[in-house]
Image (tube, rainbow, N blue to C red; front, side, top):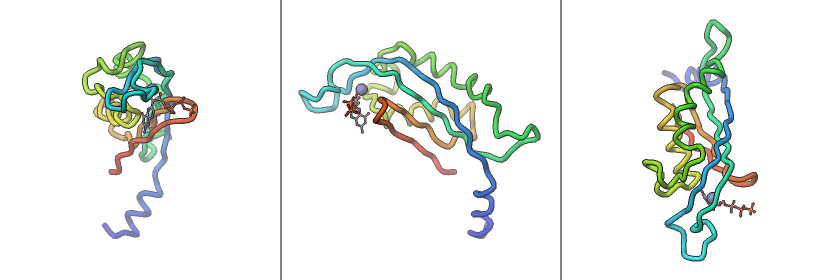
Length: 131
Ligand SMILES: Nc1nc2c(c(=O)[nH]1)N=C([C@H](O)[C@H](O)COP(=O)(O)OP(=O)(O)OP(=O)(O)O)CN2
Ligand SMILES: [Zn+2]
């Protein structure tokens, strides 16, 4: 495909997103002694899923309700948990969590383009996969 055609196709997509809130505890075992995040503490994580795609006959990329349904089993694995106990989250930084959520959700939502984690009101991470 020519670069011009690729640009044209890229421009002809929509991006939609849906946000969820998850209450969870964590600690970061790899930070230096004395770092506050070594201590057990909790966050009201905001997890946002971004999907990119063309519009179908309904005029949407994907029904927002389907995004909620696809995320629900993942939410249940995280909500009111100690994240360090969850398989794959022994070191649950925002970066690790964003990639973990991406891998957990993408089989059900192949249009998934990115996952944003907001750990606090001021700090967060986006994991993006181009494709
Ligand atoms: N790159 C990363 N840095 C930090 C992470 C992380 O996941 N990735 N995580 C933490 C801690 O979990 C901490 O709870 C959040 O950090 P921070 O934003 O520093 O929290 P504060 O509430 O203290 O921030 P202020 O907005 O400055 O009050 C640390 N770093
Ligand atoms: Zn934290």
